[in-house]
Image (cartoon, rainbow, N blue to C red; front, side, top):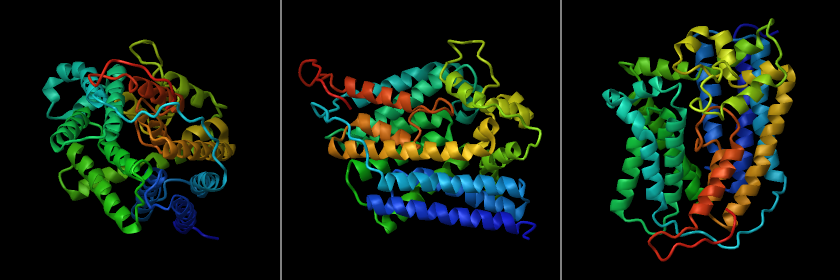
Length: 413
C-alpha cells in the first residue's frame, strides 16, 4: 500500500495525463494549439497541479488520500467530459442573423468612456490611493460592487467591440489600449490585466481564423505567463523573488481549501442551498439590498473554515469544488461532469455560429464559456447575463452614430 506522499503524487500525475490528453483532443478538433479550452487548461495546470505539486513536495499533503483522489478524479473527468462532448456531439444550429453587424463605429469609445465614468466615483473617493490600486481593491470589496464590476464589465465589452473595428490607426489603437491598461491598473485586480490578452488571442483564432502552431502557442503563452508574473509583482508587497513565489503558491490555495471541506467528517450537507444562495445573492448589488447577508454560498464556507480571512472582509478564500461537495457530497462529481458537458455543447454551438456570422455579441458568449472574465461580479454562473449583454451589445451596434442617420436593423447576435 502506498503511503506518505506517493499516493498523492501518483494520483495527481494520472489525473494530469488525462487532463493533457483531453486538451490534445480539443487541439485536434480545432486544429489550433490555442483554443477556447486554453485559459481553463493552463489555469488548471498551474493552480491545481504545478503549484499544488510543489506544495506537496516542499511542505506536506494538505488533505487525506480520499480528498486527493476525489479532487483529482473530478478535475480529470470533468475536463475529459467537456472534450468528448465538444469533439463528438453535433452542435445545435442557431438561426442566422438577418443582417450582419460589422461596422462598430464609435461604440468602442462610448463604452470605454462609460466604463471610466462608472469607476470615477471610486477614484475620487479613494484618490489618496491612486498610487496603490491594490489598496483601493481591498477597500471596495463591500458596498461598491455595482460601480466596480459595472466598470470592469463595460470596459471589457468596449475592448471586445474595438477588436471588430475595421479601420484602426496606430494612434487610435495605442490610445484605446492605453486607457484600458490604465483602468485595469486602477482597479487593482490581477485578473483584469490578463483578460485583455486572452480576449485578443481567442479573437485571432476564432474570428481572425488564425491556426496557432505549437511554437506560436508557446511564444504567446509565454507572454501571458509574463503578464501573470508581472501582475503579481505589480500588486504584491513581496520584496524579492522568493517572497513572490510564496505569494503565488499561497494564492493558489483553493484546492487545499476544498480539501478542508471534503475531509470534514462533521460537515453538513446543504443539498444545493449554498449553490442557490451563490446564484441569487451574487446577482443582487448591496446598494439595492443593504441587508444582504455576507455569509452566503462560498462565504459561508469561508466563515466556517477560514474565519479570520472572512472577518477581515478583504476577499474571502475560494473553495473550488468544495462548494459543490458541501452541497451534494461525493455525487457532486456527477453534477460537475454534467455541467462541463453542457458547457462544451453550448460552446461548440456558439463557435459554429461565430464562424459563420462573426459578431461581437456571439464572441462575448464564447469568451464567457471559455472562462474569460467579461462579467466579474462574483462566482456564480453568469451565462444568462452573458447572453443578455451579448444581445444588448448587438442591439446598440445597430444604431449608427455620425456615419449616416440613426437607424435600427433587425437580427440577432
